[in-house]
Image 1 (cartoon, rainbow, N blue to C red):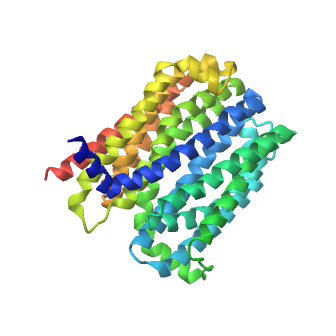
Image 2: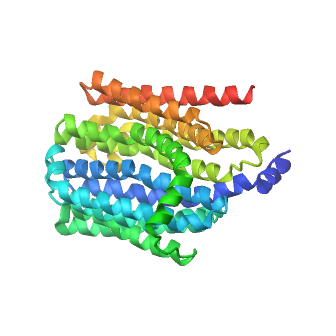
Image 3: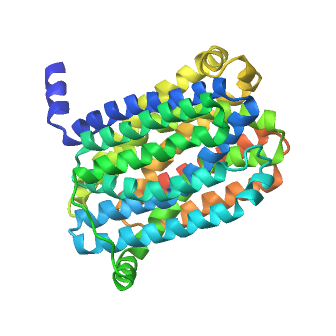
Length: 408
């Protein structure tokens, strides 16, 4: 019986792709996570909080990059190669404009979030531009299920982010230096991914417009699904930074970093799941969905158990004693991250089958979170619970929608 089960796993393409991508992602996740405890020791609690705010902006702006990624994967799978140049060029133009706005409004943003560093947002602007070619060429590789190459590209990014960020922070360049590693990692990862895929020329304005028109409806669905999950796991750090002292914000961001291990350890599963859904094979959708949810439960659940079993020890080892007083936040944050991981798979499924219900579910989750934060924001714990409630709403509504589609 065991032999039959193992042979079934060996022959399961979805399992094989997940293993390749998961093992690569675990190595990358470990390297990415090292960035946080090292920075927590190289920088003050206040500076570490500022780095986490910038990283939260990276996650939120990453909604556009992830939307871009999904559109490129979708276009590649549907043989829409002439449109790729237009999508790439449009994304580059949009991100250059965004980077210019960040540079112009950098002083205002620094004052709004009470930053000591005056040029951190300027470095972030450089990352915004560098992230476009990295995302585009990695998506091209992912579309053809070369998950080993995708993992290697992500590994280049993670290693350089860690090494260069650590060296710059140790040299006294503070928050800007810590973020500088992101820029270097993005440039190197883009160069590698481009070297193993077909280069795409810059398109004319007419081609950009045609590409956007062709993919706009799908892009809106992608944007809302990703915006919902990203806001639920990243916006809390920004809110706490705005409402509370720099020390409290730094401690909160450290605890949130540990809890996010649950989400990031399962991210590869959702990526493989999206790439495996084929419109012409609807009978396989339910099986793939159940497999993806099962993998998320095993991996994310194991990470959550670790966070809940020894929270104080985990915090002291990874971040240091300065963050121990925030241990009470780890339980609700960990539960929230696991629920968001499940919701991400469900939203990805609705996206793959082009369900318009995704608009209402994602939009409802975002609106509910905003309303809850406006009503209940007296303590960091209240903000954490706001996100947890919105995550439960998103998962339940997405799950019910899928259930009803399969029982018709």
